[in-house]
Image 1 (cartoon, one colour):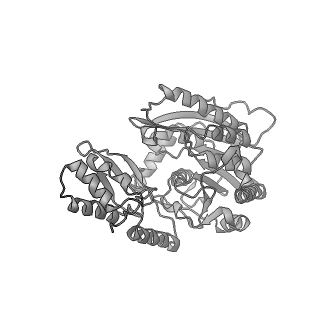
Image 2 (cartoon, rainbow, N blue to C red):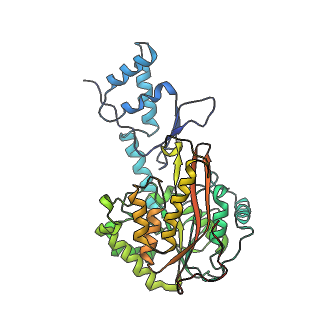
Image 3 (tube, rainbow, N blue to C red):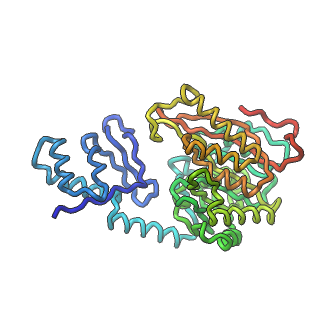
Length: 415
């Protein structure tokens, strides 16, 4: 009986090959269970759907015979299966062992090591300090006490103006507060919040963790949290915020990092209609009330993801063509964020089945529920071509507690 082919992992990054003389599909592992990167040549790309856990090696053999016109494909079958397996890209025992080792290593580690130093930003401390200084150069300080900010989690190269405008709103004298960072969990389970007691280590140094607050949250909503969530090991949405906080307040800044998974709400339901999510959001609200001025909020969020890189059939260009309509939709959602209208914001996001593919919606919603009286102001909105055919949008937002119906004089205009 022919052997069944293992399933190709569903949590891999597949994208067009960026190497001009090696066309095809590039495959890599965003979870970093595997360090391998493969480029599958065009003739073999059509074989990848056969790795669905149902088809067999006979099906793969037949497909390769049709592609090559040669009956002698036995070695090619074996090579393709072995290459994918050894790379850790198939749901087999090789992958399972890689996953076990990585999870165990993170559980046993005393710190959360920098995952993106040397790729998304410089690994050399002095060069990194110079890069962050350039990002924040020319910032105009905010004139009122800020409860928190939302900044992008794109690379600083792409979103530096939004980083600058957001972080300029945080009081430079606020060195003794805890910064609760809500980051987007790109890889975590839906309706779950990822916690860690570990400090974050970057080329600038090591943050001060908040294990007592982490445990306090976990005790109040255990069904909604993953403690020592492995996603912290690979996620960039919090790591980038930590860099700017360390640059502004020193390497030992006190940080409480929380990864927010996506919310799965069918039929127009609100996230808190999941009882476990409701308990965690209530715990966040209690924490906000208890800590008061000892707490500041930083949200690492991006907005729309459009174009071929994100599964659309069209090429996207920043603020051109379809992206003009995307900007209008983004701004409608941001208006609800500014108003502190959590329910209205979520109705817009889910009412469209999130056709804009916002990856910051859960963090924004959690914040609006945790601090229901908050008001926001969009300081800057941007769209950036992450490649020639794909666009990410993001914004800088400052949050304050309302004093009447108007923001203070001197607020920056939306750009």
